Amino acid sequence: MRVLALVKRVPAPGARINITEDEQYVDDKNLGHAISPHEECGVEAAVQLIEKHGGEVTVMSLGGADSEEQLRAAVSVGVEKMVLVPTDGSPWDPQRTAAALTTAINELEEADGAFDLLIFGNESADSGGFQVGIRVAHALGRPMVNGIKGLELPEGQDGSAEATDGHIIARREVDSGFEVYELPLPACVGVKEGINLPRYPTMRGRLASKKAELVAIEPVPDSGAHAHGSQAQVRLVSPPEVASETIILGTGPDAAPAVVDLLEELGVM
Image (cartoon, rainbow, N blue to C red; front, side):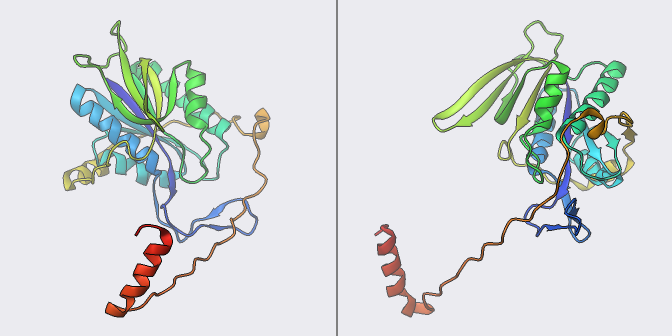
């Protein structure tokens, strides 16, 4: 089974986000970065499938040269190959991103055969557009389901798209339980954070990630947003900060009556 996991370098979740003076970019000079959380779970899901059914995982990212850090982080937890679609590091709109990723995927598949499964994050942690995975799946003509909280291959199936009954079971959480989808391979899915608990890299994995070869696939030169009449960013706006008030009920045993009064007020006593 061949699986491709798509990841994005984003500011570390929970960090204070500032906007540059021209309101066009996130000022990340003093921010740590990580793989977007949904996509980190996507990498783990890909590695788990390969561990159980055999095959290999490739990880791909579109971004600046510093995105290599996130690609090597994926290799350190079990991914075999990594591919960067290099940019100058400036934000790309969903159409342009999806077009560049589709071109890169087609190039890889022409050389080595089709991927059985493409795993995207449900949405990125920074822009939250929910578009790239769906656009890539549409461009490739493959089925796609977002919001996935469970992935498995039927018992006895090796996951190869060449098998006449090759398919994967995907589960999406809803209020009443789960929706279950049976997708013919090759297919695409967008997974949500919580589908699994991503593993920590081992020392052996970290050493392997330093030696792994980085493959770069240049995006199409004229795939810019304005050249194709797609979305164009106007400006970024920071949301207003909401201050929360903390009330100290007391200290030690003297606080007990106040705690009881509060519990009664909330209706839990």
